[in-house]
Amino acid sequence: MTFFLDQDVPEEVALLLRHLGHSAMVLREALPITAPDEEAFAYARAHRMITITCNRNDYLALAAEHPVHPGLIILIRRRTRQAECSKVLSLFQRAGETGLAQNINFA
Image (cartoon, rainbow, N blue to C red; front, side):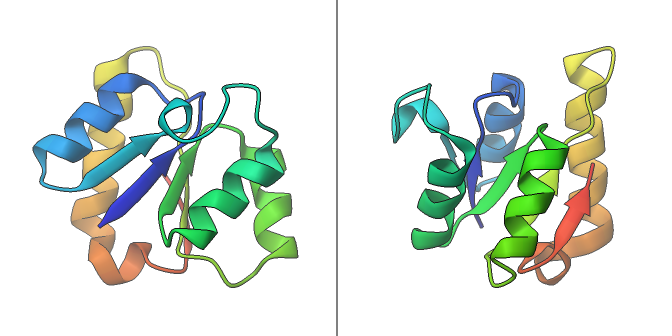
């Protein structure tokens, strides 16, 4: 699977995804760090990447405006990066590839 991580997602999540054999691009690798959410979500959709973000409200609104998308994961901030990575891993184990594709999930 291919993921696009918004600027607010910890680098450790990208490292975890890559360790699991997935492709993970962070926003700053493709767009200016100041790119608006609309541009970031459009980039991910155009390149068929599942978006991971901590920006719940803006991205849920964008997903409602563009209901056809590769997938969206809202990462809920936790006390530690380890806890955040654990929730992402747990989501992957529960949902599988088919559960992530073209759906909105929370981790």
